[in-house]
Length: 150
Image 1: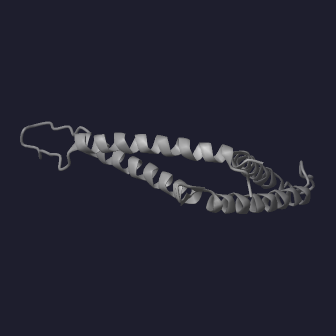
Image 2 (image 1 turned 90 degrees about the horizontal axis):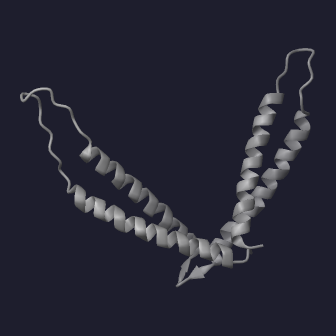
């Protein structure tokens, strides 16, 4: 199985676990004298089975990510870099929004606000970081489809 397939399977298992949780919540309490629509014990057993599968799959994915190297860096390092790039971009975008948002003034006597940052420079930085993120994402996706799950 390729790493990308394992990642898809992990997402499916997480979705399945979420659905089982919702079904359990709907069946753990019923009106006195009524029977639940589904057997909570069977749902719990299925949930435990799925959680066990997920645990093993996450371990194998993480182990594979640590062992997979690209130019001396592990896939785990590349993923961490991607996550931080995304956070950096998101943070800088919120800074630009705060700096460029309009503030309504109703008269000349009201307080006047000025920008304390170079919005154009930050926007250029966001553009450069976004390009780096796209390139890194392509590299990670390529590794995911070329790497066998350990």
